[in-house]
Length: 92
Length: 163
Image (cartoon, rainbow over all chains, first blue to last red; front, top):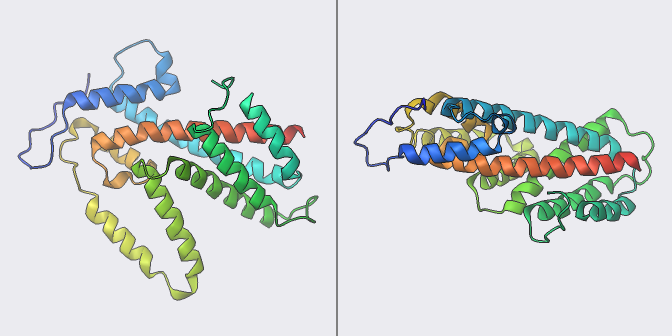
């Protein structure tokens, strides 16, 4: 594990324990599509954070693209009739 | 996961309902121009759809997370700015100053993760003011909500393209 021990500061701010960080990082790891498929347990915390940033950026881009796609499609559709079909298919 | 019956109180269904309502509202004011919208109209629509998507998701999460609160407050400020545009950009300066003051909170114990955490802070709404623990926690929730958002938007877009 590549994360160093957090420095023992004398500040009155609550100290974040290594264990907490490790636990949260592994929780994040479960969400990342790439790392989840790799069976190695040795992914460093900093790599996880890096992948997380990349993943969030790609999700933002997808939202952008989908918004653009919807803006073109919305112009050609009657929303009322489509709505019922959409809801039905999302439920099924 | 997609084949489950939609739980009416799940995040996915709350977001879907809100987002669809917003889409209907966005589509409504143009009864005549259905065949050839101008590029400008399309761009405005794109902006409104994007805002509606982020807003619908933040509302569906309510105030339970810092990132959703930050998103909602950012959206409100932005719409307020738009309305008060003629009065000058005073309030944006104060907001930035407040954020700078809180940005050094709780960062002493980051160990080796400081640089990546800084990058993450810029991506997650409200991340600047969180300590590392909360940041990681909020990030996990934020990613979950983003993927739901993408999933629903993709489904809707695919449906519209088939009609």
